[in-house]
Length: 77
Image (tube, rainbow, N blue to C red; front, side, top):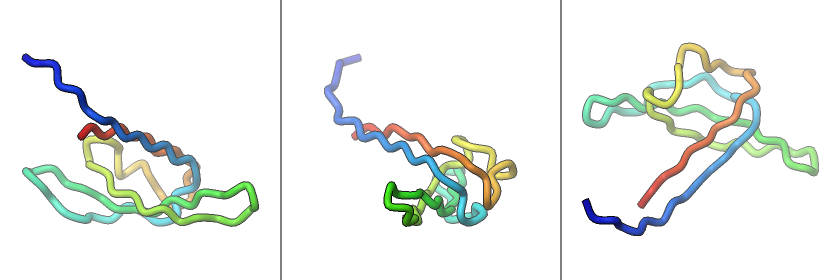
């Protein structure tokens, strides 16, 4: 196999789950869910960040509104 140089994007979000996960779509038999995460700025204001995650990456039954959590992902292009 050839070594191919790729660019890697990373995201790390730490905050409170603002909405319960809801089904978004399915692709190649894999379900994806959407939810919002509330992230507090240093100023005290909150940003609401939309997250779409594969069912393989988290247990949707254990992720509930109000949970303190972090979202971490690495995506290669």
